[in-house]
Length: 451
Image 1 (cartoon, rainbow, N blue to C red):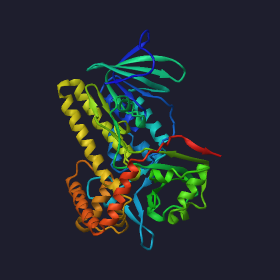
Image 2 (cartoon, one colour):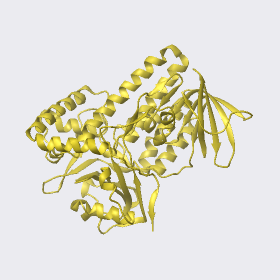
Image 3 (tube, rainbow, N blue to C red):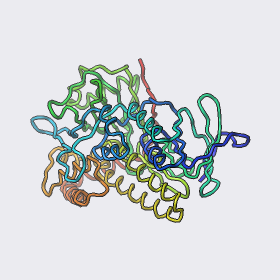
Image 4 (cartoon, rainbow, N blue to C red):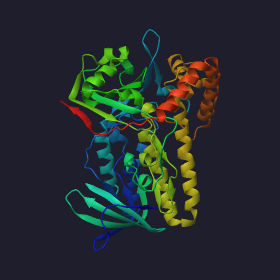
């Protein structure tokens, strides 16, 4: 494993640690905290400074047990908006169907939270410090070289112009969508089944759902993708659209107007935001969502969260997959350092588990905008508890609960039967999705409009 670029180690100060963690997001903070708690010397490196903006504000119920084991559940509760479920647009009197997490058939908690990610991420990174990790900000890893099974070297530059080196026995790459090791070592591969891009902003004064549904994330479909509304603290609503690339390529002029014009394509959503104010008059666009890596780990290194793979955010899976994966990875690192002979098998099992959960999400993600899946979400039926199985999927219960997993398999069978009934529309949507997955699109993670 090598990653080149940056300055030489020669004549530099070199520090030593048991584990180096690249990235200060949820995955990196979780791994750093848990490994430090196990007694390892951990150096965590985040190139930016907290708080820094990040999308991905809606958490899943299955995050809550991870928070509890990590020791931050009370802190998350203090930061978040109570999220009892998700609702999807429907042809009924209310105009939507609610998928309440309390109806899940597994052991997932009956609710989740929605958070400002900059506050959430900062809290987790500070918690890693409190657990004993040497968590640094403004420190960017610019070069990585593996010189032996337990000897990884890192070149680090600080934002005040200093540089130094680190020698680590193990490396956890949680660098997010930078995917440092995966990109440098040509492990990263574009998803050939799905591609999307997002445009979004934050609004004050948007209309909430009534009563107990007020904290729901709301999902709307439109011709070119899907839209979200996420209630956040202080009366702010995150609102955006995840679009197929060919639609976002039509963007001309100011991005603010493009976002508003896009939101108008969903009359039901637009009714809830037309009187709201765009906070800071700021809109962001990000593209090229879906990818994975051909390998999750090797001797002395492991990829966590978005550094390994990223899925479309329709079911808010990112933070949960990152934190649960980091928790599993921390256990693998611990066991590998104590019993090196077990490392290959531990990494294989970790990767198999993570890919299995991602595949279960992906089945729904890839087909979400198709006519068959849209019909099934608009008019859900609970025969054989299939609707409750879907709720468990939405809660993130995708790994260890047999009665959930077999219902998701049964859902696939029902989906296939429904697809055969309308095979021409299904086939057209399938061909269009694959064509869009091959499309070229360049997005970004920075504000595109401030005017």
